[in-house]
Amino acid sequence: MSMLLKSVNVARPIEVQYRGSPIKTGIFKVAVSGPTQVGYCNLAGDGQADLANHGGMHKAVYAYSLDHYAYWRALLKREEMVYGQFGENLTIAGLDESACCVGDQLQVGTALFTITQPRVPCFKLGIRLGDESVPKLFSLSARTGFYLRVLRVGVIEAGDPVERVARGQGRVAIKSLFEAYMRRGSKDATQILSRALEVPELSPEWRAQIEKRMERGRD
Image: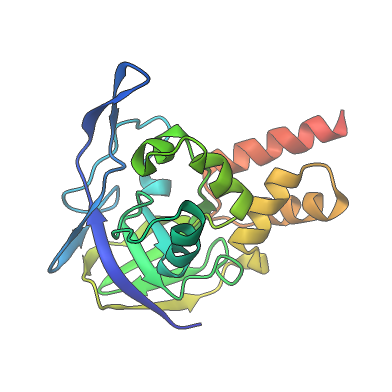
């Protein structure tokens, strides 16, 4: 699996109107040129508005596949889509959710990351793309990208190779995990969710949600 960092995207939270009311969001990421410092909770110049649901050490950086852009351009009938369109910090060519697993370690520039969970979209993705149907379409597509925890701070830049330097325990692929979480109840889904709970790097948020879902299934 060969991956390449095509763009680094950041934004500070801004206020926008949503259904007649003001909300703050950091989803309007824009590409930056040159080296960018990676901290333990975000990239330099980046920020999240809703810290209860975004950001923190386990969701410090969000990565999305450049390869998915063609799918969305066709589906949404858009001629162009700029980097950062999905609120991602890292736009990565060759990123494949069916090959990237929870706990995989990725070296980019001098920084080291580990994959912690898939992304579940919220309504703000619809705001960013100007289409309220997008969050549902995003989930149905299973083209989720993933969140990263920073294991070693450093500097990254567009053009850096993205190298997987370690594999996650049990090799629970991001796509398989997301689909199992959304499917609910099936035997295969339950097995995947159980394996995910054994991965130390799984984010506390997803661990709690999976445990709650599996507990309900035993009732």
